[in-house]
Length: 69
Image (cartoon, rainbow, N blue to C red):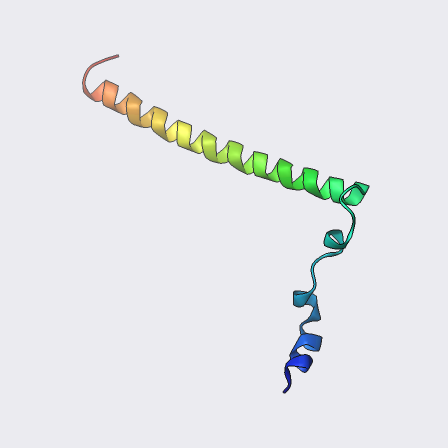
């Protein structure tokens, strides 16, 4: 098959979403940007919480093992 047939078959994959075609000042684009920022903030908060909890347990176990309450 020619390459153009592959392009026709997989047009869903080759084209970006409808949000990418819009100007950046439309409500849809602003909502998408806000959603991405919110999701990044949520993921960052969860990961930082896990890291801080692990480090707290690590240092707490070191203090308990050496008798420093």
